[in-house]
Image 1 (cartoon, rainbow, N blue to C red):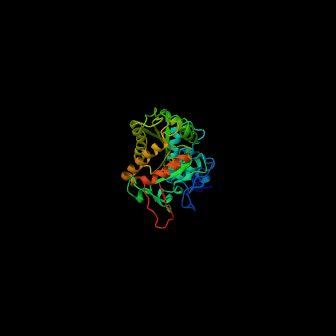
Image 2: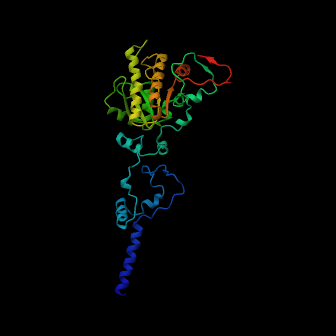
Amino acid sequence: MPLQGRVSGRLALLRAAGQLLVAPRPRPSPSAGATRTRGSACGPRASLSAYSPRALTPAGVGAWGTAAVGRRAGVRTWAPLAMAAKVNLNTSTDWKEAKSFLKGLSDKQREEHYFCQDFIKLKKIPTWKEMAKGVAVKVDEPKYKKDKQLNEKISLLRSDITKLEVDAIINAANSSLLGGGGVDGCIHRAAGPLLTEECRTLQSCETGKAKITSGYRLPAKYVIHTVGPIAHGEPSASQEAELRSCYLSSLDLLLEHRLRSAAFPCISTGVFGYPNEAAAEVVLAVLREWLEKHKDKVDRLVICVFLEKDETIYREKLPYYFPVDQPESAGPSFQL
């Protein structure tokens, strides 16, 4: 065979081999949004929805080889080494890795890692304005003026706080931050052991202060831990100030991290012994005054109670702090 023919044949073989090594160009995905395949060994693929899993790594080509050939050919290719491996929140012992992994997920992708499937979306939680609609509530002397916008920023819900899909839930913690009884224990069990591991690095927390961690397996992205005062019997002025500080410190972290929604449990009213009605007065005053200054920086603050007794207390006291209009023809009214 002439020399020219032999050279042409070798070039053809080399071109064919090169095509096998280079990942094919992506075809447009039929859907507009990126999705993640369950059971994938890789992390989030928001920018890779147009690729098929088979096209990403051709048979017999390693991650380094794919990336290297792609650079030589001037083609943009996928390099698995550049992506974080998917983290199993049930077995991982590295809270930093898990926290970083969760931050890279979309809200929809995070659902795969929730400890529960019956989670409650924020839009499903009625506002106080919606709750009071159609109910004529007569309050002789409300403590604050009517403000419809503020009534849309506050909610009362009797539910399991660990199932709320909000930016942050507040944990009524003890000073060690390592878990305990009541809502504290429930949050740690639902979030998983990685929450405790991160809390170990926070070096405890003083009464009235607050610290923030990731939410891990919780529908909430973050947990804000605050330590309430122990007050058996009539609370003192200093104990009342400490309870106020719990809520204000938690709200400060909400602003610092630019979070738009949060759910609060009844802090200090369990084994810490703070009287339920006295605590509700403090809570509603703090939330009302804070919202008057920062209403544009949050979408919703949820008072999440567990006991029927607390739900009754807040239903009775909310109209004094967040007055509502009385419908013209709402039937008989009741006086609080």
